[in-house]
Length: 67
Image (cartoon, rainbow, N blue to C red):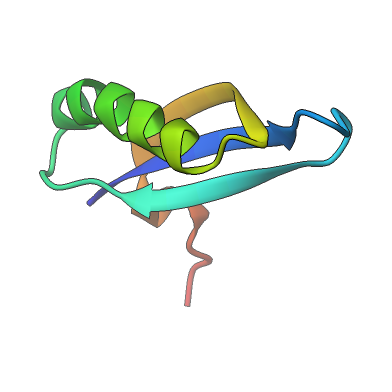
């Protein structure tokens, strides 16, 4: 599964940033890139006190630790 990671910061406090992680429908990076732009636009409409600093797509396994 490919995951969309959006880095957002508060407009009133630019140093207050965090990552929002969201699974994206589909198994490909192309699906994440295409749907990620739409998701990011919708997210910012729903959270007007934030601004998006960057967004990226990566396999969700990339952040899982080995067992």
